[in-house]
Length: 244
Length: 239
Picture 1 (tube, rainbow over the protein chains, first blue to last red):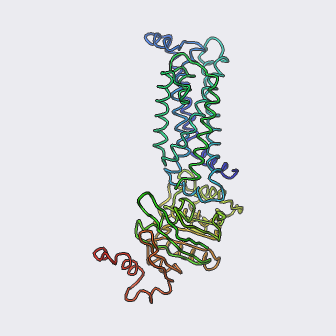
Picture 2 (spheres, chains in turn red, purple; picture 1 turned 180 degrees about the vertical axis):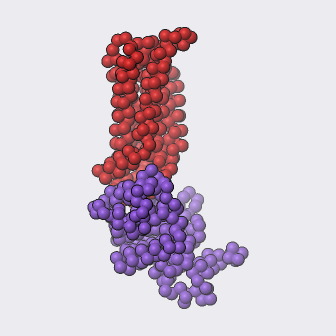
Picture 3 (spheres, one colour; picture 1 turned 120 degrees about the vertical axis):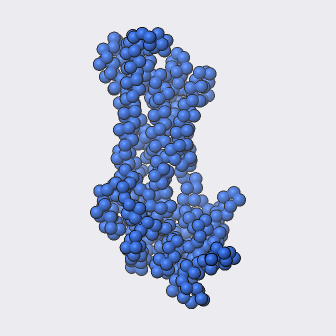
């Protein structure tokens, strides 16, 4: 596991992915700041306020949550797709299959590096959100929205992990991207229809408030964790047993 | 040692490999030949555990589940992480193959003539040097079994000669068991100790390379033997 982890870390850090994803994760904060700035300016003020975006910390929080509920999943999905799909696109996957380092170790190392980076991205975005709000001089304090934002990012990240199976079984980037978009669209639709209880990918839209008033089902962390675990197990099994 | 017994792989209605039995002795270079689609790559993937046989067995180094740290391979062309340097790619291979010698990556680069390119990104290498990198990854840990699918692809004549020297040295001095699949028949005739030709997944014939002049009757060379065997019932193809 140690060799696989060192290898996956080196491959990740030497790629453009860290910078690209970090920049992409700052974009929602910038967009939310623009919405908040526009919320006090006609003619956008009415539209912004209808979405719950007001020129204060709760409004800034609401804007970022709504953007992250869709965009966050998209970005996390792309990152997971890249981690697994690149081995097929670069055709390096065969170099990982007949080794003293087991396929399970390699897959788990990929998930470990991905999860670690997702956590860092969540921390980066949260810090950027607080710093931007302070710079904008928003009234109030951000502390009430912090836990909700971190929970949304944790749920979104966990629910993106099973996309690794699509990128692996589909042998490339395209199936992973397609799965990400399909899950995102179906998740928003399920949230709007009130079907979040049976479709885990509806949770980001539900928690983020995309389907109306934001709500936080108590079972959300357990559902997301179980979905992530199932995705990790299925991906590992696929790497171990599929014909390559 | 490499052994297969009645190795078979079926995909729905297609039989890619059909009862293949072969044996490569320690220190032997085995030329594994066949037309495109004959089943060579599928057989090689089964040897390496990348594809599960429908039936039959594979044994490497005398074991069903070999010690993979003693096996090296180059399959489906030479590919590397394009954003990493030659040295970094070799270092990744060294770690994953659990080769303890920290000098192994530099030694492999040196063996394959890649020392001047060590700090170049793999994505910027020429086809020939990318192939050399693939070969360096395959031999970096001094394997006891080496399986190479089209190792001479993209190599210039000097590279092909160097590869021949490396394979001969590994097999005949260090006792490495080598299976090589190639379409460059003249090179296989010069390098291999034993040659097997498969067609439609089945072993058509096997012979010692030294017996080539005797076993070929009026055939001029390995290419002549190969084409006569494989297009015997299709004379227009041979023409």
